[in-house]
Amino acid sequence: MKKMIVLAFAAILGMQCSTALAQRPRHDRAKPEPRQKITELVSDLNSSQKRKLESITTESRGRVEKLRKEQKAVRDSIEHYMDKDGNQSKALYPLFDREARLQAEVSREMYETKVRIDEVLTPEQRKELKEDNKRHHHKDRKN
Image (cartoon, rainbow, N blue to C red; front, side, top):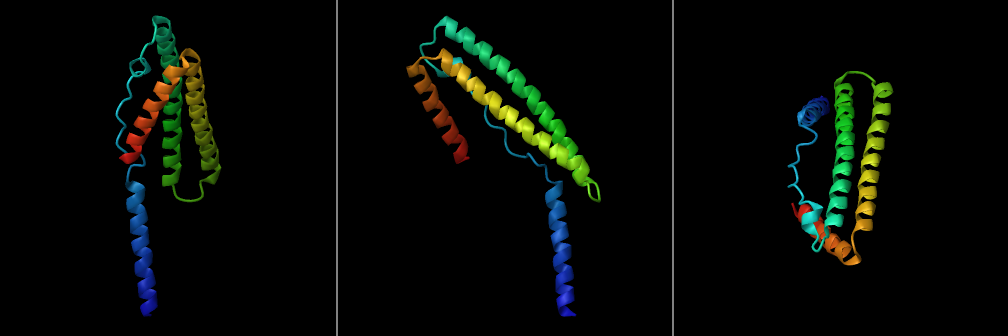
């Protein structure tokens, strides 16, 4: 009898903890500080390089923002189905796949942008940008 009471108490406690965790926002992380424009990070850019870099980053930012909006819509749908009772796998599994594809598209876009930027910069400028990225990345990891 004592074991039954302890098990029942543990089950209730577990359900309360999972409910509390489910009610917390999924993305309650602090937003990272905005990055400087690439044209401010690299020295000795000529006017042609500046124009090309502005164009590359503006186009890429637009594509990434569109993908992130779509990701948010998919995540909202996932949360909607996760809140429902019963087996929602028929609705959720395609959403999980879509979310993964969108994240892959964001990663590809970021890589393709890096390649396009590298094509505009000199080897010295690429090195300078790489060092700044390491500093910024290290700073983010500390927090």
